[in-house]
Length: 211
Image 1 (cartoon, rainbow, N blue to C red):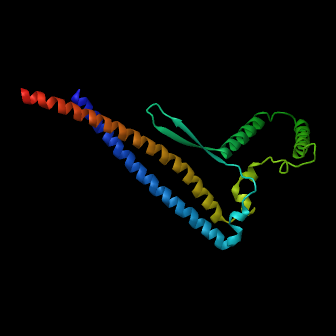
Image 2 (image 1 turned 60 degrees about the horizontal axis):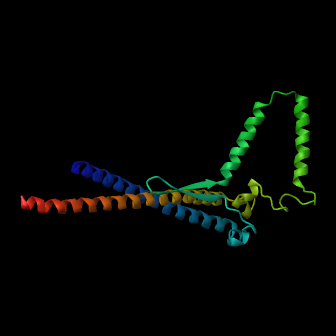
Image 3 (image 1 turned 30 degrees about the horizontal axis):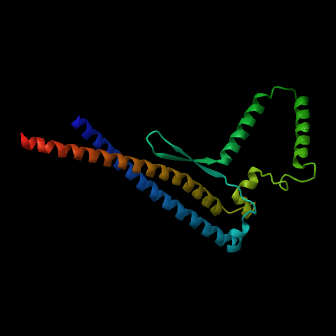
C-alpha cells in the first residue's frame, strides 16, 4: 500500500512538472504573439496614418465573434474552449455547396429557372416591407462582421497579420487557463497525499520505538 502511494506521488510529480513546462512554453508564445500583433498594428498605422487605424473606425454596433465556453471535468478541473461564430458560417456555406453539387443533375433549363427564382428571392430579402435594407434593419452579414472591414476594403497585409496574431492569442489564452486549472488541481491532490503520508509516518514511528 505504501509503495503504491509512493508511485502515485511520483507519477503526479512528473505530470506536474510536464504541465509546468508546457505552461511556460505557452506563456512565452502568448507574449510573442501579443508583441507581434502590436508591432503589425504599428506598421499599419505608419502606412495608413494614425487616424485611419484607431477607435474612430469602430462600428457603432459590435457583435462578438468569439465566445469562451467553460465546463467542469470529472476531476474537478475547469476546461475553457473558444467558439468562433465565423466557423459556423463557413460550415453552413460548405454544407450548402455540397448539397447544391449533389443535386446538379437537372437540365440546363431548370437550372436557369432556379437561378432566376433565386435572384428574385434574394432581391426580396434585401428589403423588408418597410423598404429597409438588411444593413438598415440591423441584420449583419459575414463581411460586415469582419472587424478588418471597419478600416477599409483593401487593408494592408500588416493589419491582417495583426488580426491573425490576436486570434491565436485568444485561443492560446483559453488553453493556458485550462492548463492552469489542471495544475492547481493536481497540486492540491499532491498536497493532500503528502499530508496523508506524513500522518501515517508519524503514527508508525511511535510503534517502531515501542518495539
